[in-house]
Picture 1 (cartoon, rainbow, N blue to C red):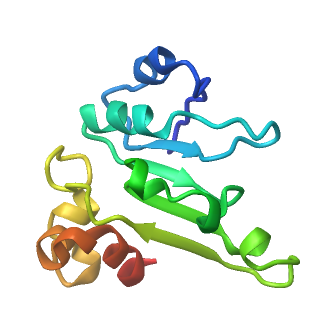
Picture 2 (picture 1 turned 60 degrees about the vertical axis):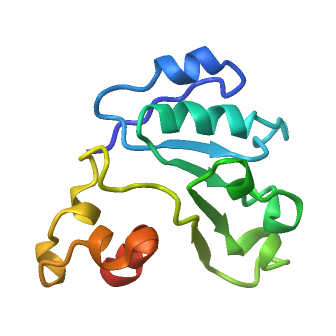
Length: 142
């Protein structure tokens, strides 16, 4: 199963102390809901990368027009296309943007991406797709 740990994103020590050996990613909103608070994305990216973890940013509320999280260290950016991007809730969709900067092989935590994947002809997405490993895995498997 998946276990989540919620922390105050403005307390950088709390963010770092919450990282455990089994942590797979640090997940953050660009603009917090419901208060619209803005975290220090650069600092949290540095913490995540220090621990060999990708920083995943939900930029639904920030929108690609206002905030470009990859420029601040995010490895993956997600958006709900149902909200601001779609305009009026008339669409249903989601967007995943892979920065292509995270090394999925380095930590040994991401076997589905870095090791031969039996569900897709034994391919190692990290070897086959290089910087686009995550997004290629998502397209092929999900």
